[in-house]
Image (cartoon, rainbow, N blue to C red):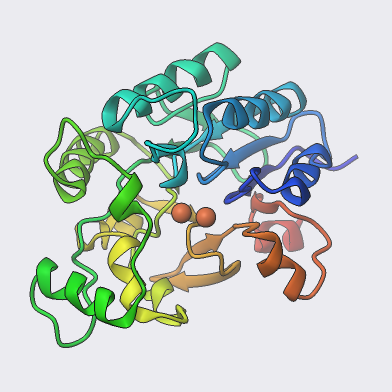
Length: 281
Ligand SMILES: [Fe+2]
Ligand SMILES: [Fe+2]
C-alpha cells in the first residue's frame, strides 16, 4: 500500500456530459488522498455543488479555488448573484460540503512530502499581460477585439461591487499577500490563473494572455516558498519549472480538446510527494 498523496485537477467543465463522466470516475488511490480543484468546474451553482459534493464524499479533503466560469452571471443559472456576492455564495456552499476555500484557514498537508501549507488562492487578472506593442489595458483590449479573440468574461464576469475586474484582482492580491506572509515553511499555491506569465507564452492566441493573470504575483512562488504551483485555465496540461519551482497545469478542458489529445492514463496529477521524492523512496 502506497502512502496517501496530494492530487490536483482543474477545468472539469461539467456542463459537458462527457466531463461529468470523468468526475463520476474520479476516485482516490488511497483513503488518505487530498484533491486540489483549481477552478472552472462549471457555470451553474448546482453543477458546482454536485461536483464538489461527489469529490468530498470520496477524498479525505477537497480544496477549491474558483475559476472564471464559476463567477459568470447573467446566464440561465437560477442563482443570479453577481461578483463578490456570487463568490461568497459559493464559499458558503463549500463550507456546507466540508470543502476548503480561499476564505478558510490554510490546511497543512502532513503526508508524504509534507509538512506543507496548502494555500488555495483567488487572484483573477488585471490586464497587465498585454499583447506585444500595446501599452495600456485599453490598447490590449482593442488588439483582442481586432483579432476577434475576446474572453467571455468581458460579458459574464461581473466584478460588482468593484468597478472593474482589475480592481477586484488588486484587492484580492493585497489580501492574499497579507495572508501568505504569515505562513511559515513551504507552501503549495493553488490558483486558477498561473502566477507567472511564462505559461501563457504557448497560447495559440497570445492576445488571450490578458485574461490569464497578473504581474503582481510574479515572485510569489519564490517569496512564499512554494514546493509547487498548481493552476489551470489555459487548458494546456503540462509541467514546467521556474526558479526551481514546479508549475503544474492540471486542466481536463473541454471534450473537443481532450478527445483530440493522446489518451490520458489519469485525470489527476500527483503534486506531493513530488516525483523526485517518489524516486528516492
Ligand atoms: Fe477552463
Ligand atoms: Fe478558466
